[in-house]
Length: 194
Image (cartoon, rainbow, N blue to C red; front, top):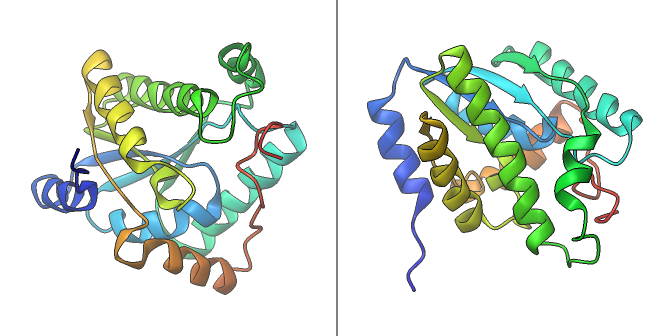
């Protein structure tokens, strides 16, 4: 089976969507950095910080603080959050605790965060929603985009496909992390990945 080139699809959609609004789910400042650089000059971009998967409120607040600092210092995007809400993740992870990293638990987590982002985008009148999760070389962009399109159809809002790691996106995030001295965590955030 051929892989879909989601980076190319994103480029094509960005040409059609110039000036429209985008709600961009962000897992952390390092991942959002290169993503924001790519989309903020095309879309009216708002970062949606929804990460109930994080293993502690302290980690949640630390990543949120870095997200806000990066956005303030870079001047990229607006910010929206809905609070920690760890119970959302606990509910979808129940019974999947022993799944390997990248397995069914992660798929359920992607779905949880993308669906909440889509619902927020729909309720607040955004034209598109997307996620920074495709920046990581450890995350399955094919799966994330498949979920994104399914959620978009279910909720009724447009999904911006992406594979932000392409065209040097991940390397650029490393550069921006050094430039802004961003806290870079060594795990996705959930207690099972730590």
